[in-house]
Image 1 (cartoon, one colour):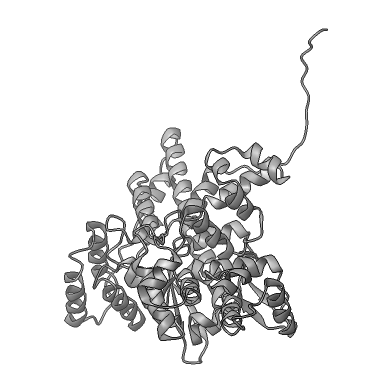
Image 2 (cartoon, helix red, strand yellow):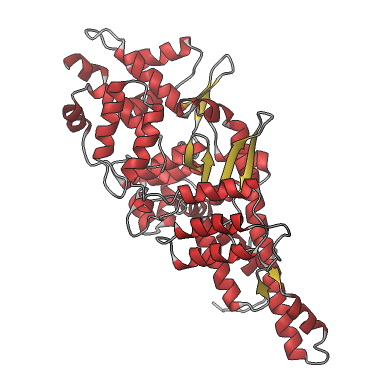
Length: 469
């Protein structure tokens, strides 16, 4: 046997992320205040970046300064960087009426540090259909810990508020429909599955991995997962990367050490005088960057000083890439938000109960981007709406289409399931197969295993157990 060494050439496709691409992805995923910190870090390391200092607009009066002074006084509890930013704004142009409205919303949000329970209760009161469900929902919220996990059984909750387990199931479904997504789960697996289902991946590889291979995922045993699932290692890695964008502790943002005193939405959703919904990006929290003219002139006059020219060209190139990445980020989030508004107009009109089915793939296709781009763009981003401030992930929920063409969210289907079981003959409770036929008569095709899954999530026992109950 002899060994020979030889050189061969082969062609293969591979996706390579340049430093600029990685920077753009990081900025897309970062929420506003984190992005601001990244931008300030870049400014401190790249001297060619600067914030334009515009001259004050003519015709200003002391009233504007008094307005801004009064508002700055309310920022005493905000970090030094935020105060410095708003102080710098005083040298800029007079604020327009729209600027003042947005700034007023910003300061109104400073009033108090909201707890997770406060945040959930406000949403629950908008969606709870009757006092019993509301009471059970409040009992559930009272048993959710700081990380966002429910630390009580359905039986304990039912006993605590004196209602039937079916009512607890309906209330739990409403709480789990609230922002932040994943709240109300009883463990990490359930928390991640709730998020995946909301993102339209409840039946895809990501959910299979979380449901059946969470231990292997934690140890990054991708080859074992791939063999078990009959998938390629590359596909499993991609699914693992997607799972990595989920939030393992949905209540974390409301912990005292993490909770921001200022609620800063990325997007404002308002209704114009013509009745149409409009989307505007919140630009007030981000520094306005440009390439310094001084350094441009220095480059032009550097003559034969090659080392200086190379340095300036690299710094200017890096600065332009940063500015482009920020503009691209804002444009991407706006386009995605506009598509969300187009699809969820009924929610803006009627509240949580009118939320329509919507998946990442649908929005990605309409916005002309990849699913993973949508996932990054909506991560930890919030929108102000006339119905409150909601995380962008809140608007994503899978659903069904009836034979008549009507779209129903899975929440609506679960509510209907609860009502069917509540109205059954207690002596002859309905089996899951019988419930499937009832939905078929209503023009809705739902698998028996899905009925069993939803029934379990609602805290409703099987027909044999309900008969004994």
